[in-house]
Image 1 (cartoon, rainbow, N blue to C red):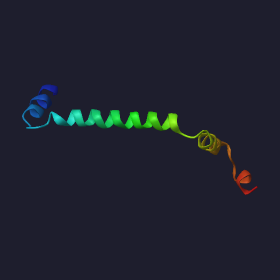
Image 2 (cartoon, helix red, strand yellow; image 1 turned 120 degrees about the vertical axis):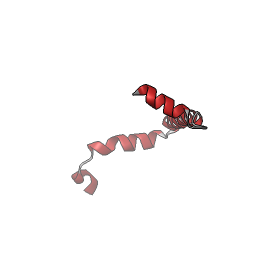
Image 3 (cartoon, rainbow, N blue to C red; image 1 turned 180 degrees about the horizontal axis):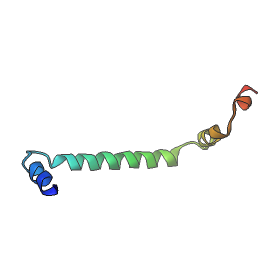
Image 4 (cartoon, helix red, strand yellow; image 1 turned 60 degrees about the vertical axis):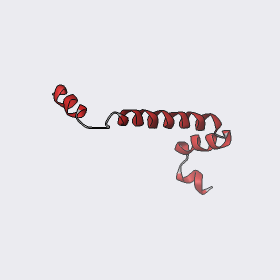
Length: 61
């Protein structure tokens, strides 16, 4: 099965660029996420971390 897929993929012209593009998208996404985590404001992080603990009664007060 794998030989069939590999042989079929080798016959497609220009397909070698897709793994490179996928790797770049993956890498850029996680670098941007890493950058956002370390530059996020502490007040925003504190507000967001309290959201799961809030109830409807707390929001009405």
